[in-house]
Picture 1 (spheres, one colour):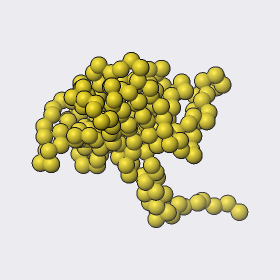
Picture 2 (cartoon, one colour; picture 1 turned 180 degrees about the horizontal axis):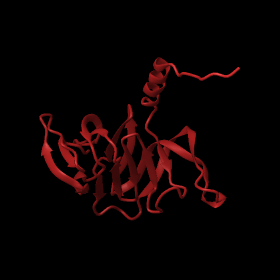
Picture 3 (spheres, rainbow, N blue to C red; picture 1 turned 90 degrees about the vertical axis):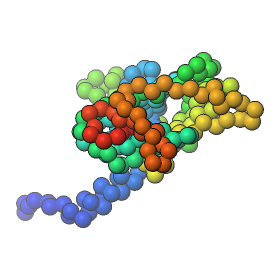
Picture 4 (cartoon, one colour; picture 1 turned 45 degrees about the vertical axis):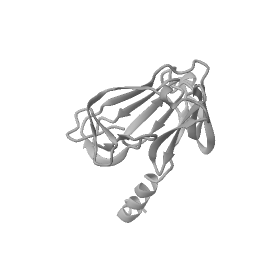
Length: 199
């Protein structure tokens, strides 16, 4: 007996909806990307690369719904403005401590696997994933933690008592325009979007 299988549209919609609710995770770099990258995170709209002193947000070239804000202590890509072409936003921390330690915390149950071509040497298996990436001692008495909040990227600077938060300095590259919105958040225009996008 032969036949064709027709997927139930309601079941497909439920699967896609549940996929969108998976927690944001960070992969340790085990050779699946540039060696300067410590951790990376992938979503349907962008890929985030974390180096020892920089966060690089690479928007996909297809339509992505991304509005990013830089608020006082967190940045959260949110679905609001359509970006028709990809773009790259770089946030580089200035004058960071060379002794800062970058590590994944809250290891997740899932792992990532990369099977690139026929060469087994290029394969990466059981790459650990984490819920958070912590930069310990990024400045004297100051740590930085990246994490996901309901699939949204956020970060916190954790300032110890007596530490000087004015040492935190960030250079932003790749934004074509910057303005403050009605909520007081900084909105950056990235790529060839018609509306604001950014962090």
